Image (tube, rainbow, N blue to C red; front, side):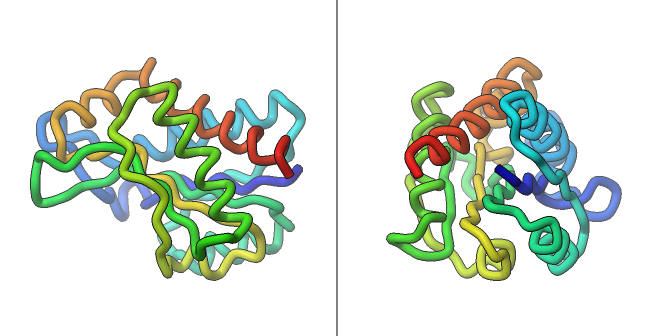
Amino acid sequence: MKVTINGGHYPGLDSGAVGITTGLQEAVVTRELMQSVAGYLRAVGYTVLEVQENNLSQITSASNAFGAELFVSIHCNAAASTEAKGTETYCYQWGSSGARLARCIQKQIIDNLGTVDRGIKTANFHVLRETECPAVLVETAFLSNPEDEQLLAETAKRDEFARAIARGVTDYVAQS
């Protein structure tokens, strides 16, 4: 199984969301999550491409050239309200393989980390639309919410997110 794991945003160029209490940068968190998820998937025999670029077309082109069979983009959320919290996973359209992959990953995160379940949503994001395989974008938790930010700030909790994402991928593959 060939899987592309994309860490959202790009350290040094595009920090993405920034934690309100710790200053934690989304791009740094997603790089670590990308590397950990890739490691877990490699450990079970998957071939994994890790890609974190500032240009969305470079990300999708690299994944398509790699011949990925699945694509997972990892992000941290933010909102104007510090009350917003939880996990949501995006796919391109309902009823698709991407939607099934999104459900598997969302379930693993909610069941294992107990974050607020914000559900599966559809979006016309470039990385979902332009990949040539089932694709999802995971918003792990909100850096703009103090409780969620603390989850993302803790190394052990980030590892739990990575393991949950990897298990969601392997659950999807087992069901296909």
